[in-house]
Length: 178
Image (cartoon, one colour):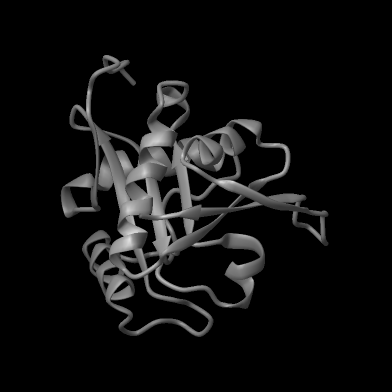
């Protein structure tokens, strides 16, 4: 992936039909890091159906059991997808412990350019727009880059949660969205 200049603006936007090749490539790249870029894509699901389903999830329509309304956005710089964010509009028991309000990721070839911080900043504005005043943001306990990103966006460290089952230890932060 070509390196964008430092002043290139990053925009969060909805996933579109035309994003399929690049989004699938991003998904493959991040799968190597054990991170899912495309959320809840069903095997054999047509891409237009997947994009439509993301919109239904944003609206809270037809949610699977245990799911909450969520906004899925891709991060674009100079016409390229560099990452993504998912903003959960509310928390269920699992999200309150393991997932938090906001999940984000940056493609390996686009890291160390400030994209994660900008993705989280913009995702916090989205969270505010859906009524979240203070977001819970969680990262793996050993992911110091993600911890630094959350702290750069005003995250207040809440606590370290010890490893449980297959889940690694996690760091919990509260971040004011306004």
